[in-house]
Image (cartoon, rainbow, N blue to C red; front, top):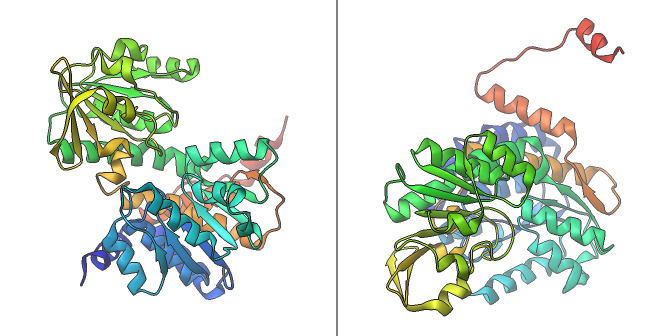
Amino acid sequence: MKSGHVKIEWVYKFMPILKSIEEEYGPKKPLKGLRIGMSIHLEAKTARLALLLRGLGAEVIVTGSNPLSTQDDVAEALRERGLTVYAKRTEDERVYVENLKKVLMTQPHLILDDGADLTVMAHTEHQEALKNLRGVTEETTTGVRRLRALHRKNLLKVPVIAVNDAFTKHLFDNRYGTGQSTWDGIMRNTNLTIAGKIVVVCGYGWCGKGIAMRARGLGARVIVTEVDPVKALEAVMEGFEVMKISQAAKLGDFFITATGNTRVISEKEFLQMKDGAILANAGHFDVEVDVKALERMCVEKYEARPNVTAYRLADGRTLYLLAQGRLVNLAAADGHPAEIMDLSFAVQTLSLIHLATNELTPGVYAVPSHIDEKIARLKLASMGIEIDTLTEEQKNYLEEY
């Protein structure tokens, strides 16, 4: 069996919620007659999702949501299983954009997006794709932010379900998934010890929380930088050091960005860093570490290891950038664990069914609470865990004033 098919078969065994959804909804075919355009990090777990959606009746067209996050063997496996795939692992931004356009040219009825590139393109450069479009589900913090901005400017033409904001997504995917997979990407590509090192985590949202938590578990001294005073205070109360990036730049051995913002670490920080400092990004886009500044400042650039670029500066110091500043857990590793993405992709699937069976006006919507609860119960059941339920007396008590 080819490697892509082997990878897909492996994750099948560790995604029991999707199996339960397949068994429940498969005979009903709730997505029959609909084309779904997927823009997502194309690897084995997302292949499992694409195959599930086809099993629920949809025609599925897939592309990648980041230039370096497609695994070519998995893309080929999906083609061999009869799906339309326009995706390639590439450093060429133009190839990535052309593949997005090819998906939109199929006139999808629904879009499953990761980072909102596909949806934003449909609303700006390729509005003919809006002709059949009935709704969008968005996977990421960054993508939801972008689509809310589109809605504030009265440009959003379809309903969007903010999958990222579901409790069964961000509390687990963003925290435990990002926490584990980011360190997997860093450790497998550097082969360095984390214990005893100083780790600077830029951003203390749910992704930053997971990264900081796992760094501490590995024995690192963790510094958090933040612009939000509430999140900064939370990090302090969690026992982390909190300071400005200008102070942290002098101290860190590892720097990891997880903010969703641009130029979080730039030239003035590079000038202060230790020789041998390692830079990684866990945010969706490659804008958080100012790679252009590194390119401008260096006197020599070379590949130190696979997925590790060395930048030697004029004063003799060398800084190391992982995965070209793209999201390190997918561009240089395999992404989140299958059990975590089982939760997130269950939210995606049930949200798509919700869009397909309900008429919604344009706007950004929360995932219905019954979907969150259903997924949590399915996950607990798959783990063999039973929980209590309220008695009628208890329900009535909670309704009293």
